[in-house]
Image (tube, rainbow, N blue to C red):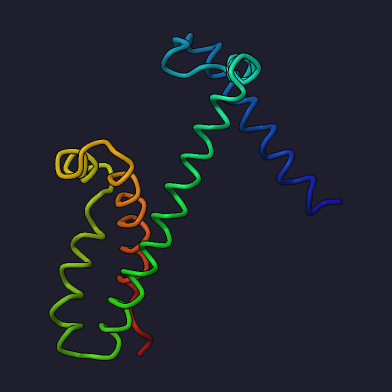
Length: 137
């Protein structure tokens, strides 16, 4: 019971804080809608929101799979070859240190706003984690 109660209580607390923030700080609805507004919108447009959720899920899964296809081989190459580790690893660490939000505008310019950009963004975010892991000593 305790195993399920704490996560549920945590979610209730997050939603309560969200609702409280929208009321106390008088945040405009278009910036941060309250949980009630979100429920109303879901009631008015369930088909549209579910369709968009499916698109988001599909792009995220595709991007994650792409990151596995790209990131794991790079990580394996780094582990197997000292030369490649010294060549590839430093730029990967630099890229990993750059905040993802700083790279987002560059992705938009390079790739446009189509699904390809979103998949590549997911892939880059995930593959930088895969390929920048240091091998054990």
